[in-house]
Length: 262
Image (cartoon, rainbow, N blue to C red; front, side, top):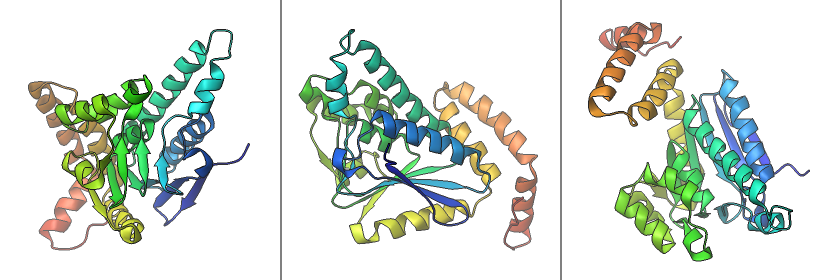
């Protein structure tokens, strides 16, 4: 089967995963979901990698699920019921693997991101898009509400903005995507990769032990009540303060020198 995911180690500490299936609009087919899931797991276990970038070739970043595969599955004896359940479960597992990945994941969007493609953008920790990029959750227009994309969308943008996207299926541009915090920023297409690499390099220069602790705590505390979140993060900070990198970071700051992370 054709490999539709390019894996490139851009620097010693940054890896770029490029979806390369322009014929399907870089759809999250069974194959693409499997490739992304497997690769993210491998990269998560690679101690030399500090930041992951997810990009795509062509004018479509990701068109969502492969509708031809969904249509073909209707010919199964159960009319596709088992296939559909497995598909959405595997895609949901992929999105969670991005959130739970100890390495920061940056989406680099230069084109259209719709449905599960928009979900992919929302699931990444950070997202930078080109000025010409656009986003939508258009399932409602097809009689198939974007319920799984809704999970990532509703956890990253305000409820009314999320509901407007979900209920209308309308496309929004990069400026609107930034306003509602679906993406961090947008830049001219020619500057996109440079901007993403500058951001990735800045993050890669930090203590990865500290970043790993912080990313995990960020998502966990967001699901807790205010008092529970403060109790949890107080314990995390106390543990973090005991780490060698925290000791080194504070010492280097007081001594006015660059830190040497463990």
